[in-house]
Image (cartoon, rainbow, N blue to C red; front, side, top):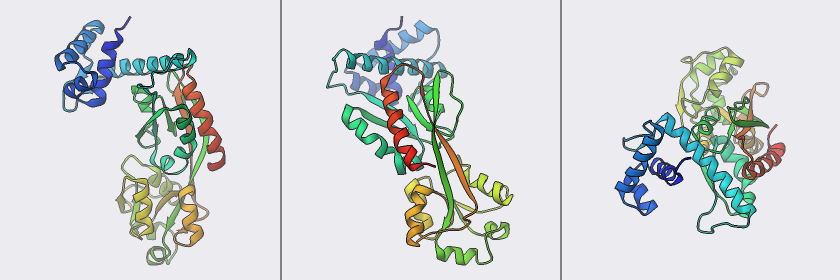
Length: 295
């Protein structure tokens, strides 16, 4: 049986990245925090934290953090069922999501749920092909991901497909694509990509134009809003979700450079496979809006 005050100390230390800040939050001395971590390490026979700046968890430490987060989720639900809820300790739900989903339909889907239940939302932003790893580490209880296969101990539900269109301003199109959209013109026109994790642009050019990395030039702008803004300002062309591109194409500010070529990205909701109403309620809210917004 674990001492959950020790697990709580571990959780706060890793969340704060510092023994000192953890001590302030826990209202105990820094040496007391260190002692709890030391006792927990002795209990499991392994090092749990890497005493760096910031402090990080070892692989086994991450396993314990996931276990502690699951226990907290079940305890919150049990408290709700028996009518006990400490108003000074609101339920916090950590979810990993990609930037494009967050910028479009995600918050409208969940806002009423979190307001109604009084929960706190902690969002972790990452590429949609990487968010599911945050379930494994215990950083998130659920995630929007492109990975259909459920991780061990998790469930996976299909939400729908996000369609990406290749867009640019009319002026940019005329400057670089007067001779059409082809390998030659794409090699010279600057593209706008999100970051090095985002392989969507690479897959698009490979699938539709048989191009390989290094055969085009690109800006890297790791912000969904600024990414779109860069395209609207004529800095380059890029792949924008249909939910973001629609109004700008309709207004004439952007054009679909290649209407017959697009990329559909399937999105899934993965969550811990434990009997907790939190994740079920969240999934129903996401699925309801996704069925109207996604393809």
